Amino acid sequence: MIKSIINAITNLFSRPATIDYPFEQSPKNKEARGLILYDVEKCIFCLNCEVVCPPGAILFTQDRSNFEFTYNYNPYLCIYCGECVRACPDKAEALSQCDELTPPTDDKGMNDRWFEIETEAAASKEECKALKKEQKAAAKAEGEVEQNG
Ligand code: SF4
Ligand code: SF4
Image (cartoon, rainbow, N blue to C red; front, top):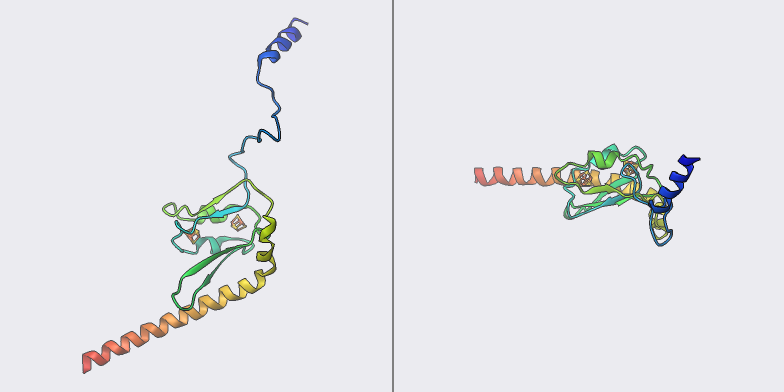
């Protein structure tokens, strides 16, 4: 009985266990896993994230004219495993995980175009590799001509 009275009095002055939603948001769980956020300014284009992503939700396409990479992320394929964040080099820290689980509705086009992006990612990287090889061979041949001439 006395214990109940003490509890009642203590509860009168303690912080409520509930929150004033929607004016107050639930505290974020540090272990929460959600959608991936990317910062192009910090990316060093090592492509580690693309390699480790189990469902292939991250793909880089490559520009054939300047060999620059473009990051593509499919939030509908993402399983929130966090492998990409762990694989991103510490010096880059270009990826992070937010606690949002629902893909933005305006990103639906990304899912619809994903097969196209997948094909382009593979083809562009392959073609850029061949182009670089050609450029290297041409530069070497030019160097040899100059030396012999
Ligand atoms: S969290 Fe997992 S599934 Fe999602 S993009 Fe990163 S590696 Fe891929
Ligand atoms: S792992 Fe990080 S630095 Fe490397 S390509 Fe992905 S986002 Fe960029």
